Image (cartoon, rainbow, N blue to C red; front, top):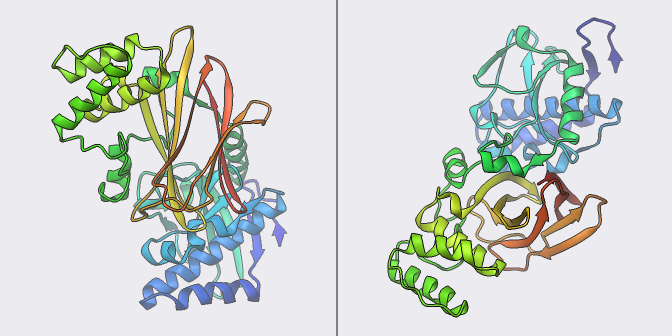
Length: 368
């Protein structure tokens, strides 16, 4: 490997015989010659970027990358590399004679950036050309690329980023946090398969009789009687008067089921983690409700994605305080369709959430 002295700093990387064998192995699993060539070049690009990051002592998790999953390679034009505790970096190849690089639309989200890798005719050497943090079109020209030093800045920013939950009350959201509707639209996912427990486990939100019975039970639990026939008004009243946090969350989820955008139902957003955990696709939902005395109620829930019916057994959801100490922890069993943790925190308080399975883990940092 040779680092050039050019002002726009590129890096040339030798492709080993073993790396070419790996790329050929992945290519032979594809149904058409065109798909085989695409997978071959994508794999070499990922391995080249991995070597580049190794030079910089930046840890990566090859097997946690979508591109290292057989289903991911078969169903998508994917060339990502998982950067430990930061996210997925897309590594797009171009041949030596080309001046533009194709960026598939299904990689435009859930990426921390895009690195373009130039290959010679023999594919014995690759040149890491440059980087862009985001894309919004399918063709990226070489002239649009930023110096590789901007990639290092981006990785540093991502490594230290905080999700500021208090801003969610003002409808300010960090990139990647979507509504349920947006996520399902982007992934073209059948809602009957994903997020079966979108609001309240086992409740048919179209069954007004069942909903009314649940609201009545909440009132009975508060030693009160449901007098208002309008369920939205009844749930809002309950949210504003009860001190029982379990009751508040149930009321908020019922309200969200019948009036998804009502401000009294709190704010909820979801982050797609993709197939990072032994090939199992999962998403993290974060919901917040304002409490009295400058506190915020927080609900965190892990859902299976796509055609997955249940979470992988052993998948863990862990809450960590600002010092890294565990304050809450839960683990999926064989037939769990979600797992969750709930707590409350003060404005300005920091915490982290770790999702883990076997040797793979992902951490998101938050501040109220």
